[in-house]
Length: 149
Image (cartoon, rainbow, N blue to C red; front, side, top):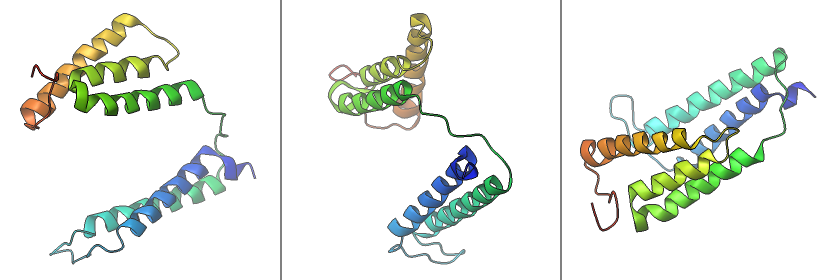
């Protein structure tokens, strides 16, 4: 029973579940052939890879002892989830930078150590990277700060 609750076995089961879900949602997509791939070819192949990897991981976990599952730490999980929700709500109304700042601040509060200078540096570096990648590199039509840029 302890091997069925190991991290490795549960990870393998998770991969298998994701593969099955991907196959279910992609069941109506045309596969095509290797030469003329249809819209369902890559999702199906990725799902099969996930199923195979999940099976290998689960079987290996049953054959070898692994780490036991710990009780989850709810503060980091909760704060990251709240940060992502706040990002999604602020992105359209306030722009990329304010939404990113709120996400980083709230997610950082979930950690064991909170150093304001490190959080501010993360905000600055990630904001610059997001502007360079999404606005300048990919030329996406997103507002950086709503009403300003």
